[in-house]
Length: 240
Ligand SMILES: Nc1nc2c(ncn2[C@@H]2O[C@H](COP(=O)(O)OP(=O)(O)OP(=O)(O)O)[C@@H](O)[C@H]2O)c(=O)[nH]1
Ligand SMILES: [Mg+2]
Image (cartoon, rainbow, N blue to C red; front, side, top):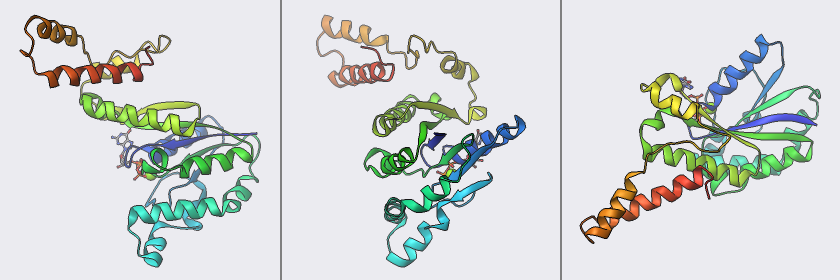
């Protein structure tokens, strides 16, 4: 049995930096953490890589040969990887049982949310004995912009449902958040209760009251919109 993480998240969310930092931290602790680059469009990363999918196929080569664009090229490259699993699995088969592996994945979310390509890569890793969890990076500067934060969290939820792996959402780039007070609200959340008190929607009750007292005084859209936000908040907080 091998253990590892599939590191996923939107383009630029900090996946490769996370892999680099975790590998460095492990070295300090005298542990061996290996990193595999699974992004055929990767341009640069700082970690030491034991396996690089670009040695099998790169998006640049695909684009040149097939005249596909960058997104089509990435889908083509991932399909090629799935059709040639021995490349990945033979190398992986040489790992020591104590080795822990981070898989640095592409940032195009359609690979996780609309297509089953990453799911199929993960399934082949599971077949050779990998016990994996998903680590979804969400840029923490999203916290200061609630609609963006909702979209980031829903993206993580969608990845979690699609990959069906034990899942951790990591807030990246915390150093860039100006309002540290706001950040601590999320970091100190009551996770036992599975509740993070984000996006205060208590004013919905007030809106509803105003609507009851004077129908049509408030825009119906405003009320509906806040009700929708409330429901999304319940889903994210796993409230029933
Ligand atoms: N300030 C700050 N910058 C960060 C942090 N993590 C990543 N970055 C920067 O964000 C940019 C993108 O980081 P990457 O690690 O390449 O992100 P990625 O998710 O691998 O990006 P793609 O591979 O293109 O999808 C780089 O310029 C990093 O230096 C962080 O914690 N703080
Ligand atoms: Mg990267």
